Length: 297
Image (cartoon, rainbow, N blue to C red; front, side, top):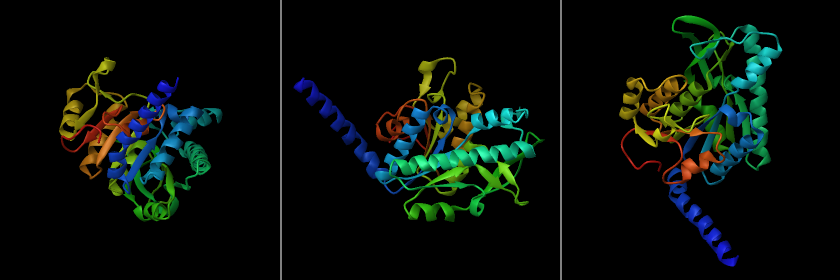
């Protein structure tokens, strides 16, 4: 029994030692985490994500959470007796739907901030409308008007830097403000990318419902550990990427080109996927980088 205990202790020590160079490299750097998918619905997964972000903060990273809430919005839209329609993957957002979306997203936002506080990390939940954090213009879907859906044109980084400088974790709700000062629903992936670009983040992580990027979507063994921009663009052109992954990878490429250090696509359904990706040599998802380098460092 004592021998087994000793082995377990050595294994735990090994994990901490493996994490050391990554903590050193990214201490004091901005990390944007786009939080969505099943990890937002399952309470235990939600607690794990909050703990992971709290640990990143406590070892010296500067995390920013950008969250979605699509499943919850759909639930409340249906409860209100309204129809849920999507065009090219974007929610058609009329005035009534926008009111529900803003209500739901703000509720999620404050709940996440409270959970962060509960684990001992200061957090502030803010809407993209606060202080004009996210300025947007109306977004069309292939020329089609889909209502109050916005595309980010400007990010007020002063707000985020002020919160970070005062030791808070910003938790951002993806509602933007247009030139008419009306609320606009912003795709959470787009909001996270815009914030990561504006903040020149060292890392941008997408928590999703898949393990990462596959070379062949039908072959789970074809998971790609790392991609350069050129490799990612070649994969997009190959036609092997479809559905919601196509705009996500394009967002990743655009983010790296705009100055984000590395973009990670992770399975948020896996417990502590953020820590495993950031603090181990091989990682568990797909990382997209600007040039060929060591896989997940």
